Image (tube, rainbow, N blue to C red; front, side, top):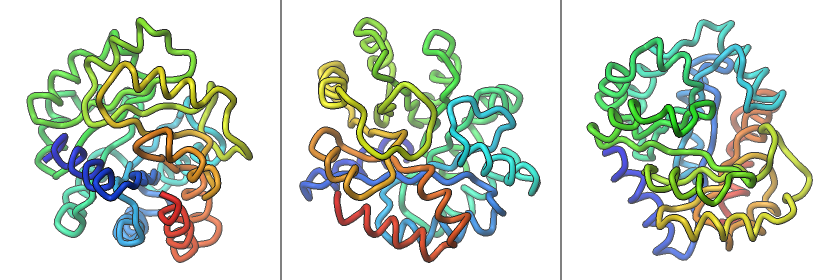
Length: 260
């Protein structure tokens, strides 16, 4: 399904006059069994799309919460092969799109063609690769396109108009709009200039816009909803799952869902 499954998720919420809620989980934190349970419970609680983070020893785009989650997942023995098996198991049990978010090194070692073959066979829907520059992404974008999987790029407030146009022209699924110039992690308020920034991205593409980095509260989600098509929440869910357990993470997602 790939791109089509993502498109359907955004279209469904748009028809309802609502926005998608996209939830990030670090796969394998603290175990793949817990991740599997969390995906099912959070999807039932209202998450429209689930990002499964591939743990990496040097997650440069991530703040302390997800860095710690990655370390716990690596210690538990999580790797890309096991995550693809997890996606295959989950696809038989959940309907929501499942997207992998990974730094490029593990994907390159696995091999882009083999990776996209296996991701497609498992029922995954796309890839987000935070540290892969657009100029070097053509080979894996071509493999994703062959399988109908989404190549979801990140843009940021300091992405130039010229570069934004290039990135948007090669994107599929949705555009991941990083809300600020910094790493992941909860913030108390919204970044200044977020409205103008998202308007500039909207002018460059007809794809849905999903905003992530720094969003953790229902109030932030409510304020951002009119400006975009989806909200991405990562660190707040990862922290809640780790410190308070799955029931608390479900309540957080239910509260966020109510605002979107």
